[in-house]
Image 1 (cartoon, one colour):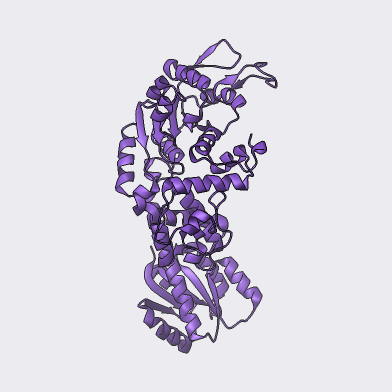
Image 2 (image 1 turned 30 degrees about the vertical axis):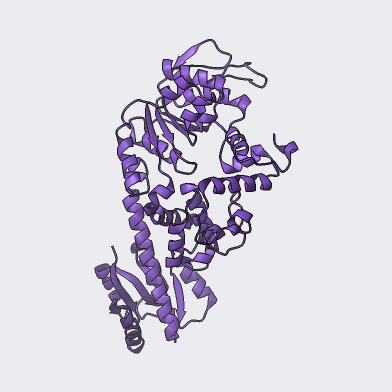
Length: 472
C-alpha cells in the first residue's frame, strides 16, 4: 500500500527546494532524491502516493526510470518534469504511464493544481477500490452483491439459508432490482457452481419458439426442425435454470413447466421419450403473481410449486444508503472499458444521486453513471453531466424510454416535488411508445419487459398507441 508521501526526483537542488516549498501547503511528507539510484531506494522504502520525476537525471534515463516505476509500483502515480518542450517526449511519457507532463520552469499555480488533482484522483480510486473490496471480496457468490444496507443484509441472510438446498426459488421485485444478479450469486454459492447457469426471459422469446427453447424438440417436430435439439432444461443439467419474467409464460406452457417441476423429467416437443433432470429452477417476476392467479392468468398450482422459497428484492428507494456505493462501483466497472476520465463525483452530483427516487432501480443507476462518465470532462462527474431528471442540464442525456425534460409531467412538477411511481411509469411507457411509433414489440424489448406486461400496462394507464397498425 502506498504511503501519504511524495517522492521528488530532481537533480537540481534549487528546483528541488522550490518544489518542496510549493508542496508544503498540501500537508504531505516529501522525500527527495537527486539521482536514479537514490530514487530507486526511496521508492522501495516509502512506496509513495506520487512521484514527481525529472527526465534529465545524471545516472539514468528518466524515461527508463518512469517505465520501471510504473511496472514495479503501479499504485504510485508519476508526474514527469522536464525542460524538453517536445510533443513526442510528452506522448511517450503518457504511453509509459505518466499521468501528467509539466514543463520547467513551471507556473506555480498550475503546478500545485496538477499535484492536487493527482492526489484527489488517487484518493477517489482508493475509495472506489475499498468499496469494491468490501462489496465484492470475490467475483462470485453472495459476497459479490453490492450493498451494505439493512434491507440488502436481510436479503443476503435469507438467501444464504437456501443456497445449499435443492429447492426452487422465486425472486420478486421491481424491474432493475438485480434479480438475475442474485440468481447467478445463488448458483455460484451452491454445489452446482461447476455446472451451467442458463437464463431465459419468458416474455422476450417469440411465443412460437418458447416451448422449443425450454423443452427442446425432435427432428421434424415442426417446420424447420431439421435435427433434434436439447432445450434449456437439458442443457442446464446439473446446474441452474433461471426463468425470468415467469409471469409472462403462456398458460399451456405453465402446465408443462409444472409437470417438469413435479416429475423432474422433460419431454422434447414431438418426442415420446422422457428424460430425467437434475436442474435447479430459479424463477423471477416483477408482477404480483397472487394477483395474476386471481385474474386467471397464472396457474395457482404452479405458483405454489415455484414459491417454495420466495425472496423479494428491495427497490433502490428502500436501500438508498447503497446508492453511492453502487455508483462508485459502476464508475470502476465501466471506467477502463469506456476510457473515461471520471473516477468520482462532486458533492453536488452525489447529492443529486441520493435525492433522486430511481424508478428504474439499480439498472437505471448504472445507465446514468455510464452515460455521465462519457460526458464528464474532468476526473469528477459533476451535476451538469447527470441526466436532466437528476438535475443535470446535459441535452440528449436521457435514456431511451425515460422521456425528456420538456415532458409535460416533468415540467409541471416543482423541483421539490416527486412524481408518484405510477405517474413516472406512465410517462416512461408513453415515451417508449412514442419513440417506437406504437410498435409494442420493440417498445417491450427496449424497456426489457414482456409484451404481455406492456399490453397490460397500456390498458391500466389508458395509453393510446401512436400508430396502432404497427403495434403487433
